Length: 385
Ligand SMILES: Cc1ncc(COP(=O)(O)O)c(C=O)c1O
Image (cartoon, rainbow, N blue to C red; front, top):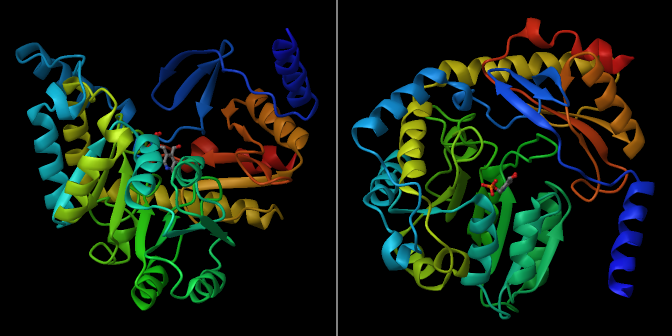
């Protein structure tokens, strides 16, 4: 009984701190709109940055294709047993060729990728250096790994260099890990600088492009493509669940890393493979997004306009991408602001600690290329109250 009392007590505490979470009651999603708690709202909380998840024509094409050749809804086994459908090979070949790298590997999710890669590659003789604002899945990967880790101040590469110098000859291998577009601040890592540091200190660089894939680069490969650093980054990861409008994740790397991960990465080995029906869809969206350069441009223009309107009104709006956070500081202000926006017809979720640092509560507006300025022009005014 004591155990359950403790759980209830902890939940009450979360409520008193405005940190209690519950599942939203979503009854429909239709194009730009979403129906929550019986109310139709413009969805400004989706990671479907190119609107591919709402592309009815593409979905119909895929369903027609499935009528001719149905793909199974399950893989019924891990990839190393019987789950390795030929679509995996096709998808990995497509990724390898798009990135021009030796090898690619598809995972069940970005979470699987991030909790598996570092624990597989490192042990207690190694050191991981991680940006302070890296995603929870990267933090969980570091917690699982045997290697000690240190977090450098967000995007403070002088601090990172101090840690690299301080580490000296003490470690067998140092790993640097960062997101490219930071999911909660919408700002960008300096990949060119990170590449210089990794080369100077012989470190291995892992970049999580979850929020950059589809949005940056001529073929939507992410910030690494936009900054010409694809070949210098040891492991680039991306998810299918955001701009690619599917499920799963991938990493590109060299042959040896792939072979090693395939043999040692527990979140790859000990889980049922993705179903072929999803792999087929991922191939379609990956190919489609590569030619959506105009959409990428209009998304980034729209984001810059919203950001400058909000900054002009004196709000704290960090970052420079399609993720536009408005910092409120307190949890209750973030909840109030989200509720005012909801009353006015916009869904912008409040984000609170521990997802963001203490006193860093905010609403996070994430934009999509299918939105136009007229859709969101009232937002700055409503935020201004
Ligand atoms: C930076 C980052 N990496 C990884 C993930 C996890 O990806 P997935 O949703 O495919 O598990 C997320 C998702 O929220 C993310 O923001």
